[in-house]
Length: 166
Image 1: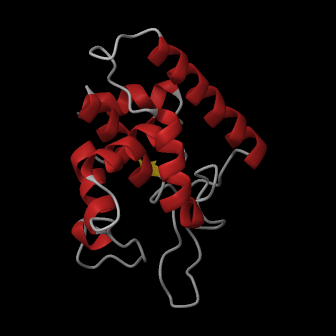
Image 2: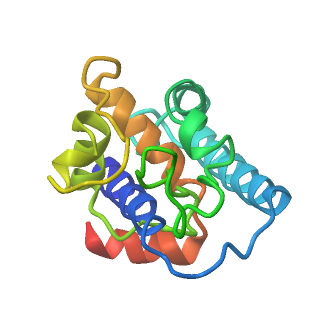
């Protein structure tokens, strides 16, 4: 189950990179949606025994995300402004949103895990972004925790679609 959640989260993250639509949400809307999802997941987590709990510790995962991901993908996982239409000063793709408005959720949990661990070149040797791997900075469990944190920011419809991929 944990891998399914992570897989769904990864797909959403990657989906956010290829979407051709303008971001329909404001930062305030995104923040409220993400926080609501986190609160619901934390409540569900409290109701489960530790052996039944398939969610990562979201407060720890939030800290890991903030320390390792937010400087590129944004504190609310919103990605860079104009991430689909503009490049950075080096001609590289800008960081996509991870909040369900991009393409992340179109990728499997395994693929998201490997992109976080080994970098964007794992996904495509012609990758034109700056996503480096975190294999020397994050344990496998920490990577899965971050994927769970991202997954828990998605709307239920996207979570449902991502679950089908895993």
